[in-house]
Image (tube, rainbow, N blue to C red; front, side):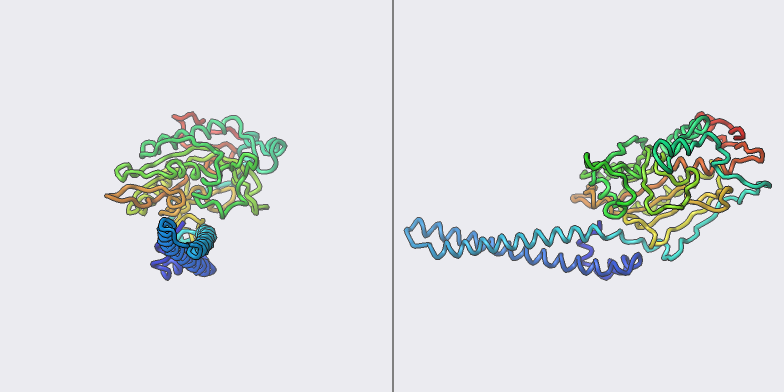
Amino acid sequence: MLDLKRIREEPDVVRAGLTRRDASLGSVVEEILALDEQWRRATSSAESLRAMQRQQSEAVAAGKRSGADVEGELAQLKQVSEEVKGLVEQARVAQEQLDRALARLPNLPDPTAAPGPQDELVREVGEVPVLGFEPRDHLDLAGAMIDMDSGARLSGSRFAYLRGDLVMLELALVRWALEKLRGRGFEPVIPPVLVRERALYGTGFLPDTEQMIYSVPEDELFLVGTSEVALASLHDGEILEQEQLPLRYAGFSPCFRREAGAAGKDTRGIFRVHQFDKVEMFSFVAPEDSAAEHERILAIEEEILGELGLRYRVMNIAVTDLGNSAAKKYDCEAWLPGQGRYRELTSCSNTTDYQARRLNIRMRAGKGTQTLHTLNGTAVAVGRTLVALLENGQREDGGVDLPECLLPFGAPAALSPS
C-alpha cells in the first residue's frame, strides 16, 4: 500500500511513477485524492458539530437545573445529533471507498527499474554449452523418475510423482541451499502453507492474483504460491527495534499455483506445475538499506547458479511486468539445452514499504517509528532447478552428471540413462 500522506503531498510524483506501469493508474490517484478530501471534510465537519453539541448539552443541562424551558434547545440538540450521525456515516463510506482504491494501487516503481516494454539484460554469465549431440529435454532424461501419468490420474494435469534418485537430488539441493543461506545470516524456517486472507492481502497478492490461488472456502484459508506470504506475516503488526535489523529468513515449503490462463504453456514435464517446492529468502531491513539488500540477494542467487554449473543471465524486469508489490525486480534465467533458450529460474524483488505498510510492520527509530522495507528472492525453485540440472548435465548416452557440491548432502554423482 502506498503512503496516503505522500499521495497528498506529492500527487504529481506519485502519478508519474504509477503511469510508468499503467497509464490508467493516474485516474485512480485522482479518485483517491477526491475520496480523501470527502473523508477529511466529513470528519472535520463532524468534529466541529460535536464541539457545538457538547456546548449545547451543557447549556441544556444548566437550563434544566435552573427550571428554564429548554424544549427548543432540546429540539435543536436532536437536530445537531442527527447531522453528526450523517457526517460520521459519510466519513465511514468515504474511508471504505478510499481503502479499496488504495488497495488497487501497485507499488511505485524504482527509477532504475527497466522502463519497458522489454526487460533489460544486465549480464550474461558462462558459455552456452556445446553438447555435440541432439539435446534431450528433462522428461526424456528423467524417464520413470518423473511420473506425469500417475500424477495426472491422482490429481489432474500438471502434477507429478518424483521417484528414486531424483528425490535424493531434490533433498540434497534443498539442504545445500539452506546451509548456504544459514551461512549468509538467513534463519531457516518451515512456515505454514495455509494462510488467512490478510496474509495474501498484506503481500499484495490480493487483490491482484486471485485467479492463481487455491482456496479452502469452508475454512477461509488459502494455499500459498510462495513462502514469501508466510514469511512476510511473521512480524505482522509488530514494531521492531532498528538494532534488530536486518532480519533474514530462509523459508522452505511446498507452493501451489493454479496457473490459470497458462493453458498450452510449458505443459510438458515439471517446468510449470501446480505444486512444487521452493527455498525462499526474505529480509526485513531499514529503508536506507533496501537497495543494497536487493543486490545482496541477487548476488546469492547468482552464487547458487554458478556453483551448480549453470549458464545464466540476469534481467532487470520492465515496470509493466512487475507484480503489484515490487518496486524493482531481477530475474535470473538459466540456459536449458532441451528448450534451446533461457528460462526463469529465480527472481528477487525489492518491495520497499509496500508490504510492510499493509501488514503494519514498523521499526522504532529514535523517538518515533517508521515503516520498514521488505525484500524477497528465490534461492531454489526446486522443480525448475531439477530441469536445469538434468538438461545441462546430460551426456550423449542419456545419463546425467550432477554438481559435485551436492554430493556431501546425499545427491548421486550421476543419473543412469533412462
